[in-house]
Amino acid sequence: MGVGNVWINFWVVLNQIIERVTSFFRRCAFNVLSMGSIPIHVAFIMDGNRRFAKKKKLAEGAGHRFGYLSLVSMLKYCFEFGVKYVTIYAFSIDNFQRSPEEVQSVMDLMLEKVELLIREESLVNQYGVRLHFLGNLGMLSEPVRKALEKAAIATSNNNRAVLSICVAYASTDEIVRAVEKSCEEKWDEMNLKSANGEGNDLGKELVMAENGENFITLADVEKHMYTTVTPEPDMLIRTSGEARLSNFLLWQTSSCYLYSPSVLWPEINFWHFLWAILNFQRNNLRLVKKRKQL
Image (cartoon, rainbow, N blue to C red; front, side, top):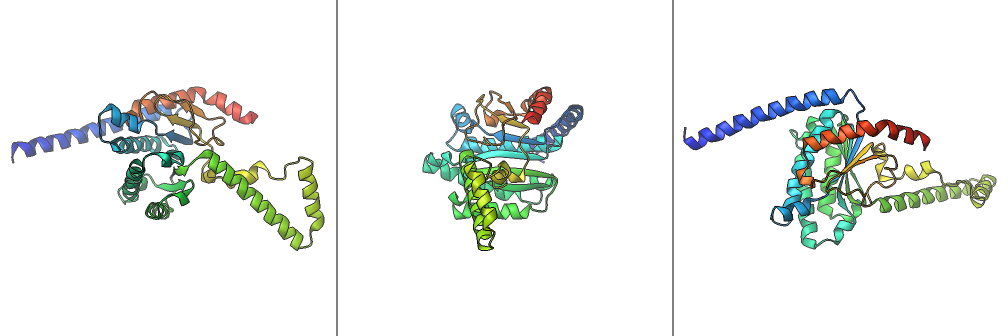
């Protein structure tokens, strides 16, 4: 056996040992943290991929590939800790305004990684994760749209956790669509009642609307949101130190804990996740009280 092969085998064994040690440490840390509140739903705004590439003098688009590695790590930590729902902001509607080359690079990466996610040995199947893709998917190219549909179908029987990937998404677009769908549904109901001779009930509903009563309720709107597949987030993590939502889950985060570490997304690690959970647990009682007041 050559010297090169000896070194390769040494590094393989060393990496396996390091992974086992770190995995044991994570389990110990999570066992301690599980004595406190565990967030049911964690959302991520993965901010800083382009700045990371520029900082490291990498090729354009390379930052997104490093960002994918960070995403896999964060998903592993979430599912090991017992988080049931994870939602990530993968690509916004505004991102289509970037250069065609960058948009195509992100779409190619998405195609590649979505196919990896649904392989039998993947993290998604290891943790029993069901995939949902949320957003105005009609804006995507047909190959990307079909790949996302295939992934959603392939994981439809997984039931231990849920990963929602927001693609071609904007919260304002989601809200407008939900209101439009609610109005269309209510209009169809009114027409059906009229056709069935229930004109008196229809008149009462119109009077209610004219008097300012809720003709379309909160529940009517919320059932048409993209995010009906998940509860509202308990915690939202946005990297790069930005404390803004950038048109992400505006409707759903009114009483959500926001954690904003200063690191860029490809730089986020286990310690940032650990600190986020500790801060969530420290603030959770106040947030629970706030939700009850709403």
